Length: 315
Image (cartoon, rainbow, N blue to C red):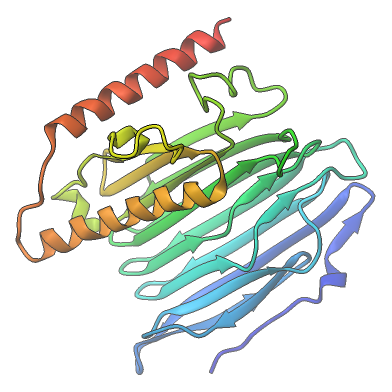
């Protein structure tokens, strides 16, 4: 039997400096029925957690905003654990908008995910929007067991329609079996040099990434695939561009930029389909198609982007 623990929004720690709130989710497999249960479903502050129906034995939780957040000075966090053998899918009901607060202090938003052996966790929230005048530092930390599966999507939109962006710093740290699989940090908006040059975003205001971790990738790494305008198939139509490439580990990472959130989502959905299709081909023993030209273009694209960012940062 599932026990849902909810903390009323008004009990979240609040002060003139902002709100302190942490939501907690634990998913555990019911060995008798093979269904994932939620022994802990603890909302707090702006995070109202809602269990939703889904196919099979996977547990699904939707994060619903109970108040405007994050604002300047807020200290917010979500902690989610999928224990060994469990399957958990986390989504959100709407975009998260970072706004200015009553204090000049920045807000923090920390996401901490833990995935046990044989477990799967999908973290698929709606975009984060950095509104003008806001200052947010977001950190996503993932701890994976050796046989854990992960699908993680992050989307960021710099400014609402017709406005400038706020200051946004974001870090993604993923460890597998105690070893670092991915550690990257980005910064956009006021105080971040070169972010709006042709070397980085080139006028785009939506950026995102999709990380897929599968133990199968250890033996058969994902293949490089160019996305959108970078593939040359829809050049010039403003679809945005990106690349799906393997990491040095059982993972594939897609990174993309686009004019808006809608076109960014299309690019990341394309990457997700490509990663899933590659996994199915390997599972059936059929060889996946390779593309030397795509691999070469992807290497040149990443190298030129790194060089341009280096040049802009030394100006």
